[in-house]
Image (tube, rainbow, N blue to C red; front, side):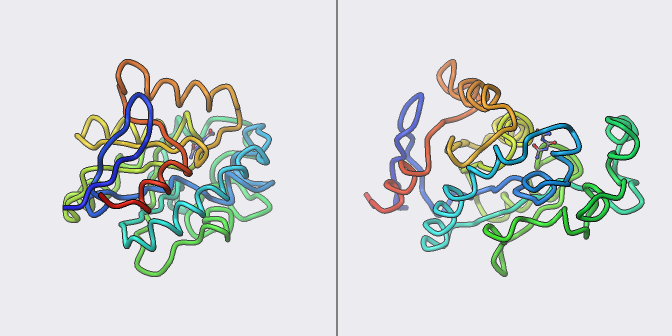
Length: 225
Ligand code: TIU
């Protein structure tokens, strides 16, 4: 085992990269580009673009390290059988989940808007988890995949900080995973929620995990002990 130390708050954390996976949450056109689900909810999607560059740098470093990289996508089956009525009925009928949008049906698997943005496309062999909920563990095979691969720590990034990233970190923390969240690799339509979301993770001695940033993670991965 070869551990590296990642500087973070509330304190530095030692991890073995071989037992650590990167989870990139929902970097989908539906959330990041005009005309998708995010915009239909009334959001300024340009705010999410700022996470793309730092995530790309994180992926390059962790791919070099041959670390496990997992991508997630939020979305539903074309017949909406996996979408709770209460989720579908949010928002005006013309812009709900399943309604036609400029990038295909909104938040539906297989549609253009459901795809991951070009700059962060998964490489062949990198698992892509399709999830119907906000958390990446609910109704997916993520838990068994992590168990099979002997993963103990997660580097969780993506969008949005306080919704799908937070839900996933909370789910992971309850399952015994140590979560590191590089703040600049996450983004929200609400900068104040992003800031508070990160604060909530690291408060009370790291109640949900550790908060760091791409620079400190990259420094750690380049420096074996
Ligand atoms: N609306 C919002 O902030 N987020 C979502 O609906 N999904 C994710 O965070 N991926």
